[in-house]
Length: 387
Image (cartoon, rainbow, N blue to C red; front, side):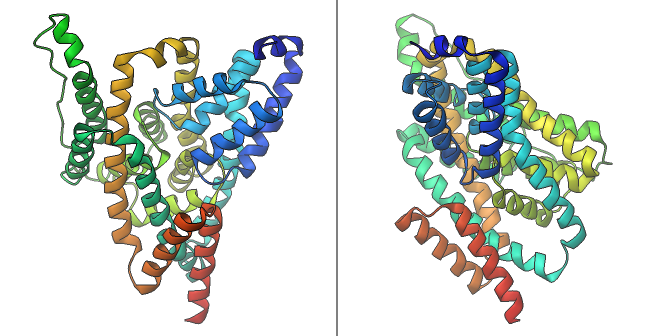
């Protein structure tokens, strides 16, 4: 019996309730980033519940890497769609997002009230170096897979350098994808006598503008744009947030962005709920809801469009080349953002020590990043108490 046959034997209402219960629980407990989230989903839906076979799960996972958006959230949407159709698509994704959104809104309110107090300042002081170590280790791990040859290495290094020249991140991502896609298919194109093919590589500098007055529609469309074009790890989100909300709109300071990132690391669920925090800081509860809707809406749309075509997408030589380029460009952006975060976070011997110890624990003992964040927060508070 296939997973589809098993699905058809159960009433839709029961399947929706099962999806809601599972993804609400994962939304409250899934710490550790997208890779950990996906591992937990595999255990639940393949091993325990047998909703999908291993091959079906791998097919869905492959598809999430071909479309923009947060991978673990898109997996929850894919699983919901496979389990209970269109209603399942909404229930699976929404229930995975909702717990993290509520937790982040609560922390954002606390930040608004207590964010400038010594205790909150020192808590974040200890968390930020841990975050730098976590991102660095993620870059090293992803780099082993993303850098496949001299061309992809050159793309990654080039994107890293061009970021500091304020070249637009979206242009860098798609240019990197286009270069690798064309290079990977060049021999086949030549055999087919297709000449004079050139990838569009227009890279536009991002101007620094004066602060723009805040409004909810701009907030929504900015996050909708980010959710529509963001490939790679959730940490790549940081580069887009800084370019739009610090540089272009002038709505956040670098320090506020760092605080938003730190809060996002403390909470379970999708890293993209950093948008919830930013929305709340800028526009209260309406801002939080608008920002969350804007950044996650494209994921639901992309999954709905791509799910029926997964076999074709996975076997396409064009899409595989594009994905290789986009992945390595994302890695370059991640590295550039980590340099900026390090400058703001590693400010004295204690913060440098926290980062080094965190990196050592991650490498040697594969420690859950959640416990490292908690430990960093405790050290920050201890430092405040000792002073």
